[in-house]
Image (cartoon, rainbow, N blue to C red; front, side, top):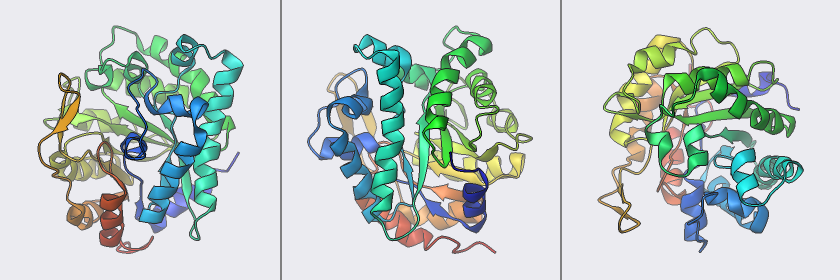
Length: 306
């Protein structure tokens, strides 16, 4: 297992450019992800495709790769016929694939193991609502085994991402205690609040005194939410901020298609960094070309940080 210090030190030298939407790139590579496991299905069926998608982001300038484990849970994999031992192997594989892609790059690349929310396992959009009817203790029990498996695989950081409410944030922060790997915590937000409608300052404050949390911020949200969220996260926590919004397009569930214009503007990277962001990237519908433009705006690691 890699020690926590190197990634925290890298953040201090930041900014670091994250990748974009893994599913976005996999679909552009020709894969149909219309499955309850989403990208995680390819951990079993076509791992080479995942490594290729990671590599596309490395070549675009990403220096942090987020693994394909967002929707990989013991419960979800069991429904697909994967036993516990097999699920553990697939979780470890998600880290190994990102590491392998990173090792093909000249510059240092960091691996963030994705720990998606409970709603991702439901595969019904629940991560954009939160409030699943489970207690914090029940959510902690759900997350803890996957956290342990991913931590054992040796990532540089755990990405507690697309978190819709403070109950799940509390559960995740409890689940990672003692795992030996630093974490970042990023909420999905709408209208300046968590998806469950909670005050965002209060949500960020949950991580303010937690030394295991090396960055706090937002992801999988409208890009128009990013700047204010970055400033708020920095002021509330005093920690480095992570920000990786969607393209700004909307999803039409009836047509099963993305609609509207791309509003993700790589030119805003300087503004985000000035406000405290040290991890900047994209989420849904942000592919390698936009990440390349973002990397050009952000500059090399350490640029713009005094």
